Structure formats: C-alpha cells, structure tokens
View: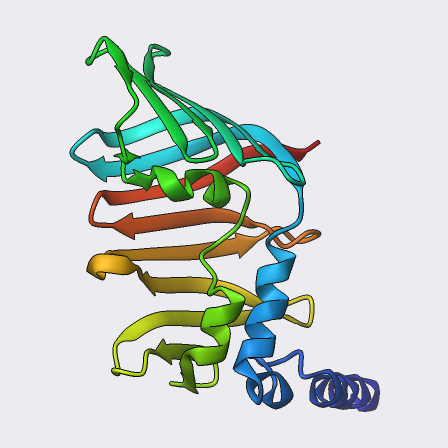
Length: 232
C-alpha cells in the first residue's frame, strides 16, 4: 500500500512539474499567442511526400457517401504543392481523379465524361486547401496577420483572433500531445465571408499527425480517416 501511495505521489509531482496532465497549453505558452501559433504552424509546414490510402465520407453537391481513395501528396522546397487523389466506388470503379499542382486544379469524373479545370471543390474538399490537408497541414495566419490580429483566450484551450472591427477571423482549439500544444480544430473566416473549419483527431502515437480529420465549408463536408500512410 505504501509503495502504491509513493507511486501515485510521484505521478502527481511529475504532472505538476511537466504540465503533462492538462490538455491545454501551459500558462507561459498562453502568455504569447502569436509565438504559440508560430510554433505549431511551423511544425505543420515541413517538406515531405505522403502516400497512402484513406476512407472518405463526403457530403456535397458533387458527391455524397463513403469512398475509399489513394493519396499522393508532395511538398518540396521552392516548388508548388502537389496532390493526386483517386477516389473509387466501393465496387472498385473510379468515382473521381483529382490532380493539383499549385493553384492548378483538375477534376475528372466518369459522370462528367471530361476534365473540369474550373472546379473549386469535390466531395466537400476545398481544392485550394486539399494538398495542405492531406499533408497534415491546417490554416494558419500569416506573420503579418499574427502581428495585427487581436488575440484572446476564450478558455484554457480555445484561442480567438479578431480584426480591428471586431470580426472573428480565427479560432484555434488545442490539446497537448507529447508535452506540446497540438491543434485540434481551426475556424478560419477568409475573404468575402467564406469560412473553412478543420477538425483533427487521433494523433499518431509516435509522430503526432492526425489519423482522422474533417473539413467543412460552404462547398460541403468531408471526413477522412487514414488506413495506411507513409512518408517518403
């Protein structure tokens, strides 16, 4: 009994010293929201190439339902982001082939019978953010915005950013992973009132990338769960 009490006391002391028992950023991290965001956004921006397969649940005007898909996403220094996403029906027939190179989008579907280069979304995925999302990146303010946006904590884990006019531009929700802040969700109101919300969950135990994520916008909603994923 005494050994158990000592072990329990030791774990409590470790929590107090390391702040690992809380799911929120520490007080020192909350003191400087701009610096906190710089840190978590920099971690998400590393160059990499990701290949694998996912399950998607889409709800949009282009497609609704559950689909398996193969993914190849690439981020290289001084080169545009690239994505090749092949979505199939449950019986194996192709539902859509999406290819992105920087700001150039190409969507090919059997129903259309042709390539649509003017598409801005498919299956609820905003194409201007598709490459980033499959690379485990999320919307972040620019360094210029970080300096001028007024930041305030709504709670120990929720951070809000407003413009000078009082408009809510950003909302971040954090949890802790591996003793570091980990972004759980992002709300971003873009130009012309467009809104993108990204939710991340189930961080990989060894590397911290989100094994499940979803994105919601005026184009629809998509939920993604990785089946297998490799970094080249």
